[in-house]
Image (cartoon, rainbow, N blue to C red; front, top):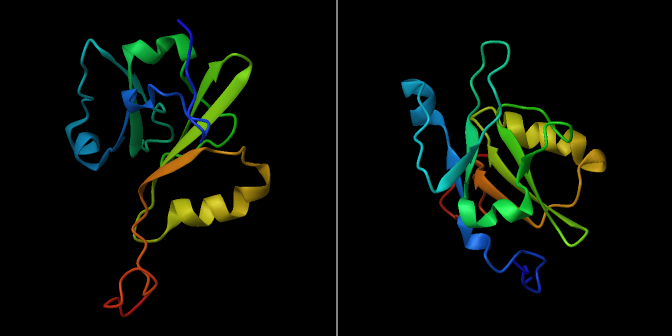
Length: 137
């Protein structure tokens, strides 16, 4: 199957990736599964369950979706790489808690992180720039 690319560098069929925070799943200790979707999630380490995951639709499996823990290995950050026609597309899912753990880690790691065409998630970031009613942060 030939992959068609958008001008932003994302595969045209990119709608097949769904990002999710894991707070409710973490409490249940069970990941929801569906036969049409591949679950991409970092294994728990040091008794810390991951707080982000990605579901990749089976129609995108020819792009070889891969969890890239070698790029960053943290329970609140997931980098998913897709590969096609000699291209690597990195996309990132982030959950930043009320201590801004993930945001601070990303700020420290910026020089070593690969280019990502999409960064999404729950940043828990408040600013007067986008909400004039915010009194702090």
